[in-house]
Image 1 (cartoon, helix red, strand yellow):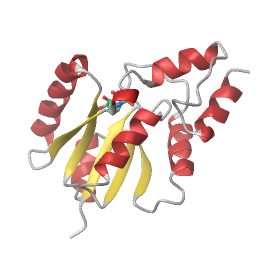
Image 2 (image 1 turned 90 degrees about the vertical axis):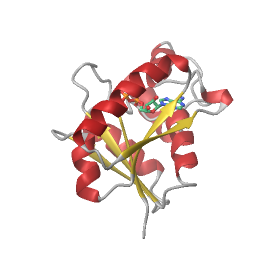
Image 3 (image 1 turned 180 degrees about the vertical axis):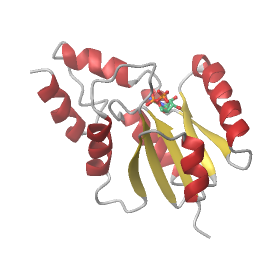
Length: 160
Ligand code: ADP
């Protein structure tokens, strides 16, 4: 049976930190569905459709990774609909833990059968976040170590 993992998040935009988690998750899952959420508590730089498009472009040649937008749906609802075996999240530091643990418990309350699975960030990517990348791009700093070239181009055009 094909093992499907659902990786929800804001991905505004996707970073090499997120990509590293996808790579690690592919050791366990046969297919990863990246689910881009609206996140009403954050104002985003990229529209939901743009964030989905960037991810789909990056993984165009990798059939095991697909990306969809979560317009008005909970990640757990999509997880049940697609028969996901796990919800994937990444941990950068202890500071992520409390928030992630809370989200995992909320998700479990909605979909008791879908377990959250955490992957630890690689050492050189623990400090990488979408917000940090946007800040550097805004002030024309060097972002190639932190994002795919496709995202690099998209960020440059946002800040010109
Ligand atoms: P959210 O708004 O749901 O936290 P993010 O796009 O910021 O969405 O992150 C999605 C998931 O990816 C979270 O579990 C987050 O901890 C994880 N993540 C983000 N950046 C990294 C990184 N550099 N290394 C490992 N995990 C990361």
